[in-house]
Length: 329
Image (cartoon, rainbow, N blue to C red; front, side, top):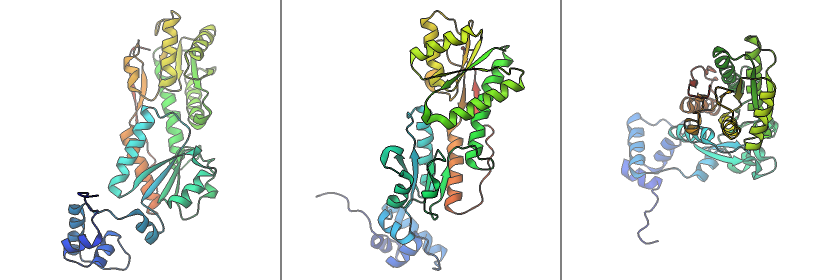
């Protein structure tokens, strides 16, 4: 099209840097066995930056056997504010390393992991659920599992982190004088691993605080389910509810208002995930906030360690969760 800016090529970079096109290729692709002086490397990278040159994905894939794409197999989850922040953060953190994040829904194809490995030639694949058949991934493609009950791994550290946040909910309620506590558990099968981890954390914390009979109710985020949950919990003589997440807690608050149940006077409610909308409920929702910025840095460090075949970074996840005290407890 007339007036359209032409995409810069390696020859343009070579001319600007005063070197050959082959040298540009060696520098930008970090070709093994080629000794290029630091001054020449600096000239080439400066010229490439100034021209806005980016290697074409197809060529890079053919040369290196993989692309600069990290593929994330996204389960059939609602994209709420928490997950959106994590995905945006991961894409942002990968960019300085020269990698892009590709989101692939599990519904995209049968045997989606193997399909992605063949079609995208990704530098790494991230799956949330270990049941995504890792054995179908070619051995040369690093696979990172997001969450699983696998001690000593990043996935296991994430699982334990979910347990720890649920324990924070229970401990906070007990510290506020509640000894009859219910747990509103999500019945969304796609969230199975998170639900299981958080329920385990809540049960363990309750038992440690002398509350062996934590009462559970499985519900979705609909108002009718929330109303049924409230009636069930009150019939059990409970004074507080720890909800699986804020999307579970907020309908409970709405149902309480419609049924003349006072929060927190009649029953206290605490959420988890720190959704911004919790600040505007009435009463405002007490919750556990996850630091998505720190979290995505950790994800990126682990992905890059896999890609570069380096030792696993620290699994420490302290400081990622913070209690936000509001009016619902």
